[in-house]
Each structure stands twice: as C-alpha cells, then as structure tokens.
Amino acid sequence: MYQIMIIDDETYFREYLRTTIPWECYDFEICDEASSGEEGLLKIPISKPDIILVDINMPGVNGIDFAKQAKEKYPGISIIIITGYNEFEYARQALKIGVFNYISKPFEKQELIDSVISLKNNIIARKKKDVFINNIQKQYNETLPAIKNNILNNAVKGAYLNKYNELRIELETLKITIPKLPFLVSIIKVDIPKEYDLLRRKELKEKMVLLINSIVYDECVIFEDNSNKTILLTGISGEGKYKLFIRRCNEIIQNVNKSLGFTLTIGIGIVCTELSDIPISFEKACIALKNKFLLGNNKTIEFYSLKFEAEVKEIFPFKLKNDLLMHTRLLDGEIVQETFSVIYNFIKSSKLPIDYIYILYTELLSLCFSYLDEYGYNIEKVFGLDFHPFEEIINKQTMTEVHDYVSYIYGKLISCLNDNKKIHSVKIVDKAKKYIDNNFQRNDLLIEDIAASVFFHPSYLRFLFKKETGITLGDYLTGVRMLKARELLKNPKLNHTEVANMSGYSDAAYFSKCFKKYNKISTSEYEKNINANSLNWETRK
Image (cartoon, rainbow, N blue to C red; front, top):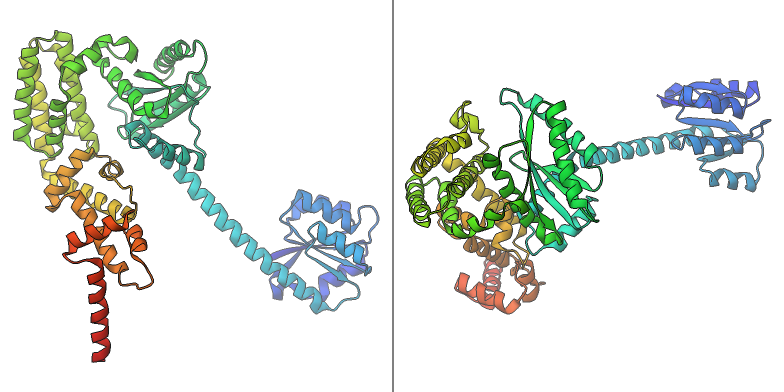
C-alpha cells in the first residue's frame, strides 16, 4: 500500500480526511498525522510517506513553507495542498515548488480521491523508471571494468594501429582516464605459490593492486591482460619522474614481499611520447620481463638497461620466430620440428655468446606458454606441477641440450592440444565470420581489423580461415557484401551509390565492377532480371 500523511492544525479535519474516505479500497494507508508543519517535517523520515496532504493555513510553518522545505529534503515525496483560500498566488507558489495539486475547500471527496489516484499512477511510473535506470546503471557499472580492460589491452597489443583517434574517442566516451604523455608501460609478473587456489590468488592480487596504488598514487592506470599479468600505464611527466618511478617499483617489490609473502618482477618498457608508442613500449616491457629468467626474479628490469637485447633481436631473424609460432598455432608438429632444426643451425652458425642463446630459447618458451594461454590451458595441467622450464634451461650444459629441451616442450604442447584443434579452429573462424557479418558495411574494413577482433595475427587468421573454410577471408567478405548488394538492388528506391555504400563500397564504379566479376552479370542486368521475373509472376497471377 501507498502511505499517506495528513498535516492540519484542526483535529476534526484530520479525522474527516482519515475516516471519510475508504483509503484501503484504493491501495492507500494513513501512516501518520501531524498538527503543524514543524511536526510534519520531524515525522517524515520516521513514517516515510509517499504522499502528504497538507493545509496551507497553519501557525508557524505554513503549508507553502512546509512544502518547500519537504521537497528540498525529500524530493521523492508527492504533496497535495488543501486550503480554504482560493487565490491564484497560492496556487502559483505551490506549483512552483513542485506541489502535485492544489485543492480548495470545500471539495468533493471524489476530487481528492481522483487526485491521489492520479498521483499514485505517477509514483508507480516514476518508481518503474527509477528501477529501470538503476538496472541500466548497475549493468553499466558491472561491465565497465571489463570494457575498460578490453580497450586498454587492445591498445597495448596494437589493435589500434593507425587508428589512435578511435582510441581517444572510446576513452573519452567511456570516461576512461589514462596518464598524460609521456608515460611508461610496465608489466608485473607475480610468483604466487602454486598450491594456492584461485580465490586465494585473486585476493592476493587485489591486495597487491591496492598496495601499488598507495605507492604509485599519481597518474597510474592498472589492468590485467589475458595471461593474468598486471599492466601499468604510469605518467612520468616532469624532471626526475622516470627515476622516481623506478624507485617506487623497487618499493612495490619490497612491500609485496614483506606484507603479502610472494615475489614479483617488473618489466619496464620505453617512454611513450605518442599514443602510437603504447604497443612498442609494451613489447619492450615484455622483453625486459623475459630477462627475469636470466637476471632472477624479485627485480625491476628496465628495457633501457638491456643494451645487448637490440643486438640479439637483429641477429635472430624475426621470420624464424614467426614461422615457428604460426605452425605451432596450426598444430603442425612436423613443420615445427623442421623449423627448430633451422633455428638450431642458424644459432650455431652465428656463434652467439651463451647468454644470448639462453635469451633466445627463453623467448621461444615464452611464446609457447603464451599460446597455451590462448587455448585456456593451465601450464601445470599440461606439464605437471613440478615443472620449472626456465630453471631447466639455465641448468643445461650445452646448446644442444637447451635446444632439445625446448623443442621437446613444443612437441608435448602440440601433442596435448591436437585433439582440440578442430574445436578451437572452428571457434576462431566463427568469431571472424560473425565480426565480418556485423561490420561488412564499413568501407574501411581491413583484414587487420578482423584479426584484432579475435586476437589473432592477420597472417595466422588467413591461414586458419582458408584451412577451415576453403576460401580466403577476402572472398568471404566479398561474398557477404555481394549477398547484401543483391538484396538491396531489389529495392527500386535505392540508387547504385546508395547500394554500394550500404554494401561496404565507397566507390559506386568499383562496386559495379566487383558485382559483375562476382555475379557474372552487371548490376543493371541483374535489376532487369528482377523486374522481368516480377512481371512474369504478376502475369501468371
């Protein structure tokens, strides 16, 4: 029931309002009474009325003053003023302060009943609206962290390549604040004991984030990537800020170790002076972090301190790593082992220092485990609990032993995942198809955009798509666009330019050329056939 409070200094009139109308029949209940405006204001927070019936002419705080104060303190309350005065000025004041209705004495009971029923309907509508808005706000608040995490992950992984205006717009629209340039990308890898369950791990990481925020309190955004590494974007604008941040990183390591009981390593990327530097800084932070396996954990590792790393990356061809990862993704064990043989011969002929060899094979192992993350597998589930691959590498005595061990790890990974190959491949391809189906109208849609939507490298996705479907990504995109174009050409109200734009082509002439090549018939001939078929059908009818 909806609660009504009566405020009037005349006892008989309060009794009249309380007893004359069968309030329960209209889903109302008298929750309280007051003999003055002052008393009414005191009782509102206790009785919590939905509607207040108040007389204007009362000593002390009159009805108008009461209504004004009540609406200021409790804007959700609805007020009906009842008075013996029938003056326009009172009505004007009442409406101005948000009073729902102004009823003059004497009045018919039905007039008051109609007024409160109308008010009840307004309250119901308002409460429904409030519930709807609250639900929308709740959903938004619940999904915002995930959206924010996804956008920032895409930014560091290079998904916004040459589209940094889009990144700015998305950040502004969702009110996601990142540090002002220049800033650094850093990655934190924690060494939480393996025996801890997921809940305990989550609690420790949440405490770690709170501790980080308390130390790096100015201009710092913290989020996680898909492999549960913690990523920091930290502003370093101002003299000495870079060195200050490094000192704070060392302080984080010491405090986490002391208060939470586990170690962590922080990899520091290069300074970003433009948004386009974000994926580069992230890549450098990854390289710095990988060196924990040579330099040890519980350290801050700056990319700038790894002078030899650039030399190693130049000496070791990117194509070999690219081929290895591509064929691993395709779970082609035979070609992976052949690629390892090429890598082995290349490294051996290059006569690299042993430290460089450790770094290269460590990076290959990291690529392997990153791939495991993509499949959603836990490393311990595949290789067992007592698995310490990087320690194994360090303890190997010769390059041949290191090489054989790393190639064995890749072989075991491929053997373990081969049974799930079809399921994973189909899932990726289906996601790519769905993205194309939803975005084919964009005339600037690129293979890179499609690949970014499924977190795959474009070359890997091309291989996988062709392997699973028998056609190329480009052919599928063209097919979707042509299907839409044939549908649109049936509409005589659309000209060719409009059909082209709605099918994902910015140039009508190029669209016509593509249409004829794909359908073996020109757009005008296609329209003639449609009209002819339509006429024949009408004739047959």
